[in-house]
Structure formats: structure tokens, C-alpha cells
Image 1 (tube, rainbow, N blue to C red):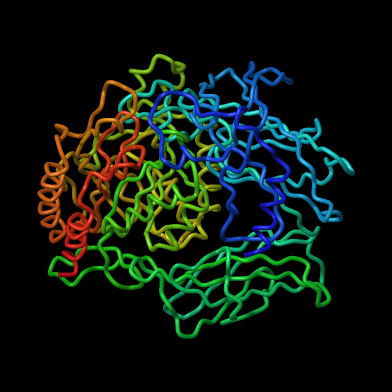
Image 2 (image 1 turned 90 degrees about the horizontal axis):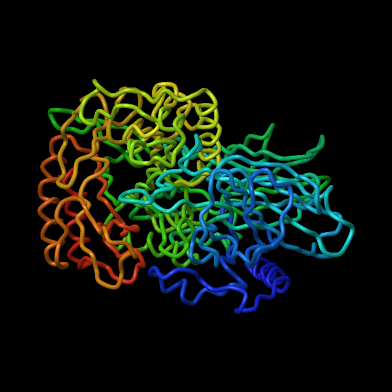
Length: 632
């Protein structure tokens, strides 16, 4: 929409960057997007595609930074850092690691546009890893704990009447030497464990709102009844205020930035709830990813106080028995059985680590996954920016969303961790049985934080219709109280399936039993009352000279291949094996993995995304044949 583009122009006029102030650091490989990155305008796209307002200010760009002792209450700038790239990354321009007892400081100035006068100003952070204290003009506005969920503050009371305003952020991050969810981040990066990510790693931005404004909405479709149930949260509403909800014409390839103006249905919310009746329902699926536009309007005495543009889709995920004599439990999309098949997607970048260098790069992986003939992605123990899920919604990719883990089984190898951390995450992993596995004996503080962060992640993501499965635990890493966690997940979102523990330590309390087997596919455990899936297999390694991470150990699962032909032959052999398991009850499979990552060379693409290791048309045909096996 034009008004958004104008707002971006205002944002970047406020930040002039000299090329001499910033350059990527390190000698590792980089993506082509990083090579052309403009430090004056990193990631300029509107960061919240499901809830768009026209006026906003992007605060990405060069900030002052410093690393001090954690106890410090002040700092002197030590240089420039490019936000929103983690301090350890090449694109930050810093490339330094943060210790448990360190604090990472950020500071920049901004000016509130004059036309925002009389409005409240909200300051938004897409994600900061891990503990963030936010100061405006020297006053503590608030703090946030959690590396994966967005948060915001109303900074209006802390702003000066005019002139330059100062924003400062203090961050602490212990990575894997603490109780915080951290996924694949590890102080000692080796094997399947990668470089830590600290600090601001998603877009920082501001927007003006009225004192009475819409905070959020959540749309849940009911395809059987032909309706959409909507919950709306708003701040500062008064008696007599009216909240209207509109469903707009959309389509495949829907653009959140340019929503339709054709109203298909409209209703008025009562006590924050609304029901839209939909005629001629158009369903979302990987083959036909139809998205509807949605608009929420707050009116007072006939005047619009606030309005946001968003979108939703009509789709249903459920469990259904097939018609074979064995009546296997399968997953159904829109009441039709569908085999879920896709890659394990780590979401890492050689130059930006957690952060893709551009939105085009972020979308690239999704587009390639579709071209490979897959219909799903398992987002592996990482959470992406909102725009990634928008791209999945738009292109038609189902998503299994993992919770980033709080532990692993490698603690004896890592003496850098404190003894209490090593002890807390030490447990037994039983891959192929409901017997033998044990929970981690973690303190209540760890559990409380897990629930807080997992709940915040689900709340932030549940509006994206591409997500069909929640995965609370992976391979028993930091696993605890599984039945309670599944219950918590179910209560937070009863509309999706739950894969209780991908890869073992099963408690038989979710919807899915998920086994892992490398390198060839195998189903060494099967439980008839559940959906049975192969949550990881493959990992065929193929290093490509000139496109690998700058370390000596380059590995895949099993002996690495010498060329593309060997990889394709092995993949097709595995696919033939997988088809047998599909006919005997396997309902989904996840191949490791989308790209190489640091020392791993088992990607379908190189880490820099410059080389695709497979013949795409032939590869896609193999994958489509696997998906179709279940229906046949």
C-alpha cells in the first residue's frame, strides 16, 4: 500500500549511513543478498503482515554498541552495530561472542514525526535474545525475557515534547549456559550445534496509535459450518464504541501490503467476539493457498478511531482413520487425508545467523521448498519472524513448529557450562520405546520460564494458518513433565495437532508419535492409537567446494557423497523405502535438511544458497510420488 511506502521513506530519511561505518566481518561464506545489503535500509518491509497500520517508523540500521560487565549501568560506545543482526554475526559488523556475565548495549537517537502529535507511540521489538532492558531518554521503560517472541512498550510518557529522543537497550544472554530456550545455539559450536545468537535479531520499529486502539485479533475458521470466529483485544475502549470486522476478497498469492477492498462479509463484535458467515468458501491448501483479507475497525460516534489490515484463511487440520483394513490414523487437511512431506528447516544463515539478510532471502527458502515438491516444513527448534510464516501462508506450505529446546545430551562435552546446568539437563533418551527414557530434573524456575516463553510463542504465531502441528520437545532435550506440557499446549491452542516429543521419550499423550532414524528411513516404533510419523531421516552429505563453512569437520549422516548424481540416487533409494512405510501406517516424513548449516553439509542447498545440490524437476517428481503413495 502506498501509505506504507511513504512511512518507510520517512524512516530512512532519519538515518543516513556512511558505508565506511559498517562492513561485514569474518572470512566465512556469505549469501548473494548479503553482498548487496544496504546498511542504511536493512529489512525495510513492514514486519507484522497480519496487522498492518499505515503509519510506522523503522528503526533498523546502525546503532552505537558496547559490551560491558553485566552489572554495569552505563557504557561508552565501542563502535557501530547493524540492527537487526546478532552481535556474533558477520552482518552485525561486530562478530563478537557474548559471555554469560556480559551485557550488550545498544543506543540510537530518533525523532518522532510531527504528524504523530497527539497519538500514543508504541515501540516494537520483533525478537531480542534473551533478557532485554529498554530505556527511553534515560528512563527504564520495561524489560522482557525471551528470545523468540515479539514485545512492545507504550513509550509516550517517556518522550520529550520535541527534538531528538534517545533509545537504549541492554541485553544479557547466557545461550546454553542457562535455563533459557536457545535451540541449536551453543557456546562451543560443533557438529549439530551452532554459533550463539545474542541481542536484537528482528526488526525494531514504532507506530502511532490512538489512546483507544486494537491490540490483536485471532481468527479461527470452521470450514464445516462455513464461518470464521474472531476474537479481538483492544485497549482504552469506551461504552458505545463499535468494533467492526470485515472479510475481504483475496486469492492465491495474496499480498498483505495491498489488501482488497471488496467486502465479502461484515459483522460487529460483541464483548470482543465476532462471527463471520462465509458463503462460497474457498479453502487453503498447499495446492490452492487461498487467503482472505481481513479488516478490523474501531469506531466511536461514527468516526474511525483505529483500523488494521490483516488476513486469514479457511482450513482445518484433524486426525482421521484411513479406509484400509488396518484403519491407520492419518492427518487430514480440510477433511481429506494428506501425507505431510518436507524438510527439516533450521533457518540459519552464514552471514546473519538467525536473521536472513533480506526478506527476499527469507522467502527464497520457502519458494525452493515448494519447487522441490514438498508440502510442509518442520521449523526446527527455532522461531522465525512473522514475515516467514506469511510467506508460507501465501505459497502454501504447512508448518510443524518446534519449541526451541532448553537442553541437549552433549553437556559432558561442554565444560564451559556451569555444573548446575549440566546436572539439570542430564537425562536418558529412549528413541524407540516408551520405556527407558527419563525427564530432566530441572528447577521450577526453568519450568515456569519454559511455559511463559512457549505460551508467548504460540500466542504470537497461532494466527498463521500454515502452522498445523506444535512440537513442544525434540529428542528429549530438556524434556520434562510431558503430559503437563501437552495439556498446556492443548489449552493454548486446541485447533492444531500436537507432536508431543519428536524423536523419543514418548508419553502417549499427544496426537502424534514421531520416530527418528538416520540415514535411511525406518519406523522402529509404532503405536496404533496415534498418528505415526518419521520426524527425521536422511541427512545425505555433499560438500561443495567454495561453499562450505570455514571449519575442518564437514559431515553428513553416513558417508558423504562425491557428486549430485550420487546424492540423487541415494535420495531416490530412500524414497522407495519410505513408500513401503507409508503403506504400513507412516503418515508423514521429514528429510534432513533444507540447507547446509555451519559444519553440516547435508543440505539440499549450500549454506550460502548459491548451489542447489539436486536436479529440481526429477527431485520434485520423487517427492510427489511419495506424497501420492498414501492416497493410492
